[in-house]
Image 1 (tube, rainbow, N blue to C red):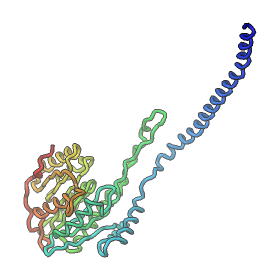
Image 2 (cartoon, rainbow, N blue to C red; image 1 turned 90 degrees about the horizontal axis):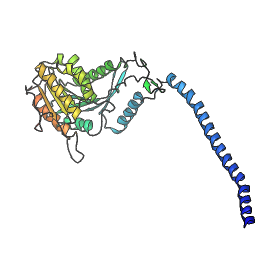
Image 3 (cartoon, rainbow, N blue to C red; image 1 turned 45 degrees about the horizontal axis):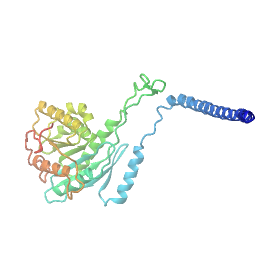
Image 4 (cartoon, rainbow, N blue to C red; image 1 turned 180 degrees about the vertical axis):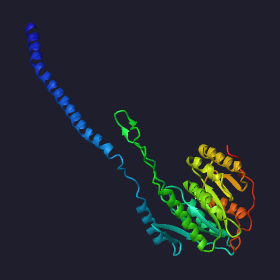
Length: 341
């Protein structure tokens, strides 16, 4: 028995160094592999980190001009002759979509300004409105405006994950942006007036609501009189534009329709817009809260088209001479679905 035990002990002792060496070799291999991977990762990180701030301003942004050219080709290829118009003024070449009214009693012209990131024939909302208003005597011209420039983005210090102080200071939104939008809207107004339409409404969607209000206050409403009528329709004005809209709304002297959805931010912004109008004493404003812009199961005009047409019939009806036949001083009203909450 002693000999057998000695034999087992000697076998165990004989095999132990070989197994131990294998484990040590494997451990050393994995350790060296991990250290090597960390070393090469560090080498690749620091040069990239050093170049990041140098290339902070080289961001990839959408190509507005290429997008406009694509739309132009699409309109020319797919739309019936006469609907697509390219209006030009100086350096501006603006694709627009024109539809003439289809009734025996023309009412006027509607200039449509789309939301940021949309186009003149945006599905459902703008497409529906520009096609159905002509059946009510309103010719439509839907124009294209460039996207709103993004605010400057500060560089970040990755070591503490914080913005670099003053890295965006002095960087301003392109100063030529607002004048270009104004020029485009005025170009559309001139086109409508050149077609003999003197009873005009400007309809702004989203950011277009701000642009339409600004141009109405600064340029258009001063032209209103016996031979020229103007109105304003705001559809889904952006809550973020409320601060800019407030003083403009207080300066309006033309009939206004303000349509919005009952979200928390939109409702609060609508209440502020209504307060600005009330303080200014403007009585020709109607504010309407809708539950949805469009219904996918509905045939015929969508809710915004029907709401706009009904308001135009009451507040902006025109005669064939283009002089407003009725400018009803309708008090501030809410739709039957209630006050803003």
